[in-house]
Length: 122
Image 1 (cartoon, one colour):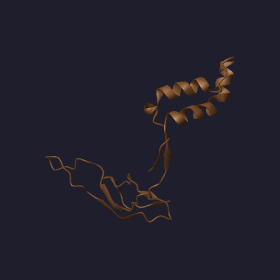
Image 2: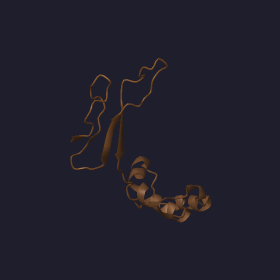
Image 3: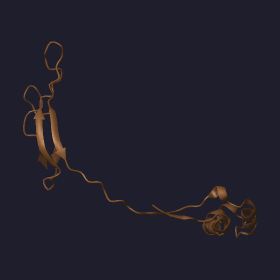
Image 4: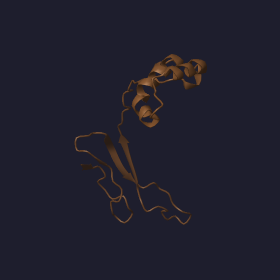
């Protein structure tokens, strides 16, 4: 780790403000500790800290392209959807077990014809 502030940042001679980076990074340069010059009407400094001014180098990360697949459930053809539910493989004798086991495959069989599955690249 590297501390870039090399002089006091408090009016009483203490270093209270720090700028720390990894030793291997050169993202910070031109670190300067300066009196901001703010004073009250009596001429006394109103702040007890000096300003730390620096140049920081930063880069925007590259855009990550991702594919989003979704269903427009509002556009479902309700008539087709009801017919597909009636024809589905869900067995109603043991509804809790049946739904848990068969939901995934049945859901896709019902939703696929009823709602288009658009693909969006972002």
